Image 1 (tube, rainbow, N blue to C red):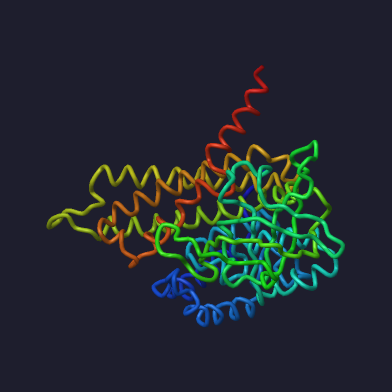
Image 2 (image 1 turned 90 degrees about the horizontal axis):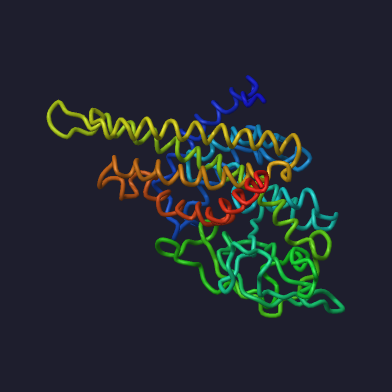
Length: 395
């Protein structure tokens, strides 16, 4: 196993890090989840520059206008983009769209590619993913209330979803719905549908107030009502909804965890800088305190260990597929999410009152990334699943 990037990728990552520092990070003071659309013109200028430099959609194949990077290669790049809350958006590899594009590129038919995938890859539209429901536990994805009933001209969808990131302003949704509620195999009861958000019966109930006021556009997390929506397009085959969702989430956890590592690296830089500049008394720096030194050392070790674990997982997925890295995918999810929380908490503490303000990106990440331990499967569920599989080997 060799996770060392090729010299060309190392140079690219360094170039992109400087680009993010000089072109993306200066926009952060204008970032307000409740008024995101005001920032879009400036972001579009950056996105045009990214496209001109040949960095657009790094995880997509070249025939879709992307860079054609492998998952391991993109993992290195994702860390650099994660240093800013706006990094992935500027490179058209932001969640949830990146997962949708990857899934469509593997399973969409010709009409679905032309109607949904290609404009999404060009950055002309956005998507959302409707799976989690308010009345059912998100950690049990085979138990849901949304139903799809087959009609002569399509499927009739009825149900309720929430935490549909970016549904506000999205052109279409990937919707998980039960098509065969009595199927003997629980994991084959649901199917995945492509549904335009302009469809009759698709209603955005509200943008959820997640750790603060509701966001808008890409920074929103919506509750959606499906009130007799007519869906004509199913992705994949009937009963493959759970399978496709898992295929989407496997590499998606690489995207998330490397982004979290990028956040942790930026938080570490801010933490170290603040510790060196903050004076407690004449001639006495915060960095001279042993507690602060211990926080820095612990953070460095935790970031490095998470990076190696995630890169190894990305390498395994590239080599043998997501199914061969099942335990690794769970390990990186809860291990990196916990690391991120610890590093952000230390950074906020070292900044003191400044850490509570939006003068740095720390407060934004502190309130937005607490969800890292919940979405894509709660940490406790991943730990239990891994432990059960591990124990089988000792029986």
